[in-house]
Amino acid sequence: MAEYSFASVVLMLIKRIEIVAMLAVAILLLVGAPSARAQLPADQMTTLTLPDPKPNWVYIMDLQFPVNMLQKIWIIDGETRKLLGTVFGGYEANFEISPDHREMYMIDTYYSRGWRGDRTDVVTIFDAHTTNVLGEIALPPKRLLIVPKRNTTSITPDGRFLLVANMTPATSVSIVDLKGRKFLGEIETPGCAQVAATGNRQFFSMCADGSMLTVQFDDSGKQIAKSQSKPLFDPNTDPMFDQPAVVGNKAYFVSYHGKVLPVDFSGPEAAAQPSWSLVDDKDVAQKWRPGGWQTVTYQAKSGILYALMHQGGEWTHKQFGTEVWAFNAQTHARVQRIKLKTPGYSIRVSNADKPILFDMSLLPSKLETYSAPDGKFLGEYDDIGSPFLLYGP
Amino acid sequence: MDKFVESLTRSIAQRTSRRSFLARLGTFILGAAAIPLLPVDRVARAQGTDFKKSAHKNVNDDLTCDYWKYCAIDGFLCTCCGGDSHDCPPGATPSPTSWVGTCHNPGDNRDYIVSYRDCCGKGACGKCLCGNTEGEMPIYRAQLDSDLIWCFGAPTMVYHCSTSEIVGVK
Image (cartoon, rainbow over all chains, first blue to last red; front, top):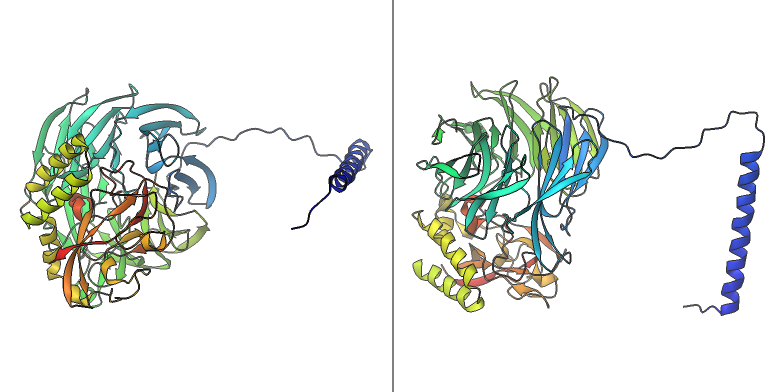
């Protein structure tokens, strides 16, 4: 390594100061000199804000892998494939958008010294237009810490309550009053995990034996009814993925082997509807099955269910999907097979008039957009960190 | 099977002095007791899985994802992080809780019950990421879920790396 004497360092500094001074004089002369061309006005620096969300926007949860202590949401316009802004969160974060699109929420865990110290679990409330922090609500430090999945938190359709799944490893659900900005209490859900709102004062959890727990609560966050169904599927032979497509008070579950189980949550107890299959005998022979992370998505306007499919054997349930298959959820007919340019890990279909099917790949880090009705490739957006989940407004 | 749970519980009891944590774990096991079969049985039963057909046949190199004992490991291998296949790297704490699986050892042609114990309390190691999924189940079967941060009872819930500890022969 070269060593510099004090004198030589001083000389170098003087030379640099001279150069900077000359440049400054040159700039002043240029600015002050009369020019034949109209000069540009001086810039005025501001901070932009987001417009109201559009149906084809997509919010992507980036784990910031491998050090996922400060996760991130990318907000992208699916039509222009332009990055509009970002929102930051903490460890194993969950994200929600208020139904009126005025607020966004990060549900996070933080340690006081980054990776060590005291644990804090908190809901951070963001203004959906400025992305500024409006406030926060402290939670009991017992959130379900898992690689982010949908249905780890959920918002009631009226936007009043945020539901947060806990695991210590005893399971419960924290009820947060978003209007009153306070944590109200917990409802125990023994033997059942996760949470998905299926009504303004109702949620369900999936249970270890394949049953569903339906819980109703009041405005004070207290449980008023709880009912566990009989097992609706057999996890020993064909487990259902734990991220179903939840639409209103109905959920479409998809199994490792490609069975679809629609469940009606409109009543006090979950009721299974007739199940059907994504795969026929020929597909089974070719080893087609669903897989990935967010494997299934439902388009309410068209009644089409989309599933991320791959060819693989047993226990390939996290394999990237090479195709997306679309089914009429009423007739169960397959209406489309979309070959993906890049195998996807998560998919989501928007509920726009011209809906976009988002295909997100983890490796490489990429978002692809397809026209949902005809499967036409529209474009892509690269370098979105380590993306796992897709949300929509 | 009950013996396995008993020994697991006992080993947890030996490794932690946190009574409140044990109370919570008790609730968890109580909740799980409502289901007819215990976790390891379920792994074996799922689809009549033949673990002899496992893609994880490597018996020599525990620095790679295809090492037999890692058949459902999900995360950074502690062997690449200054630890060993069943030891934490310096400064990381073995989690007193874990999820379990069954892996076939082609070396002796036996199926072993393995406990996927995370090392906790330090930031993510970041080396040798594996995403193996044999017998891996969704979160409602938490004992068989690999995506969960298995640091319950450790000083912090911060995940560092993953190990695979032989618990016994199936």
